[in-house]
Length: 376
Image 1: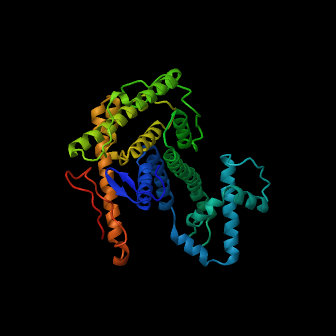
Image 2: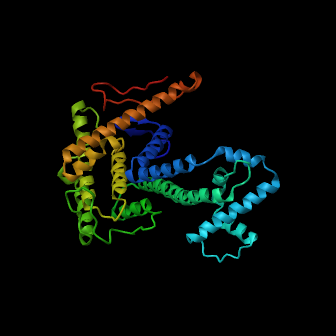
Image 3: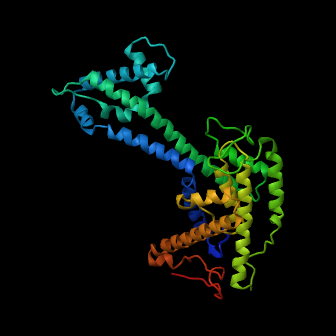
């Protein structure tokens, strides 16, 4: 969205391209984790990780390593038999078992090699130090339930986060977002979803605890076209440049506020249309932040602390309240960016940081204060 080697103005502060890229990447990471859907996936991942680690016996691993090569080989063969047997019981594979150790080993390495990091911690030995096959079998039943779930949840969480980041990057590569771009953003957001539906919703959807009914599937295109037309007409608002030279401080704030109000109207209408079967919130917030950055405003992060208010304002079609929420979140983000930039320079050796400039201040935030370069 910005030309290389050209300073970027965000919220009235000037950032070098390097600093802006660094701060934006950090924001995108936080932005992905602010999604309740993505955070729930990572929370589920943590849950299964705790289950696996709680039952993992490090002493069993150490004892196994002390055994002779012959005993270790016998235990490995037995473990492969147990895992493959359990896998066959739950139809993890369709191969017909012959019972030969060679085939069992091949099936294990084909389908269950990811068990290697855990199986040794699930071994059981009796009081005499002998390998307990029966006890190990029962312990492996627990591992076989939780580890595949952990593996599935891992890929789900990681892929959802990656898809969200890729969708954001795609949006940032655009000068302007049009309806086909919105569809593409949502497609990338849902790229790894097994139940992904391409394009606008094919079935009508409901929003949990919403007091409004999303737009009927047959009317989505018409409503989206109307929304984008109204947006480009500024919803009847007068949009003026808050960075215009020689205007009073309060006028700058008023002009910036109107920009946030325009985005609040767009966002409320977009979320109430709810044009997709899934990923509407993630898609809408990516568009919101693309618009804000295009207007040289800091992006918005909907954290857990403000998520209930955010949903309420959309529910109530409360434009003014959502505008203020976006304004406050963007201001906080800008404060964080400036603080990170300053901390970055303070952490450098003197002979290096004197050659770099901290974010140049403008009178957007400081009334009646001229721009000046600050060197450390």
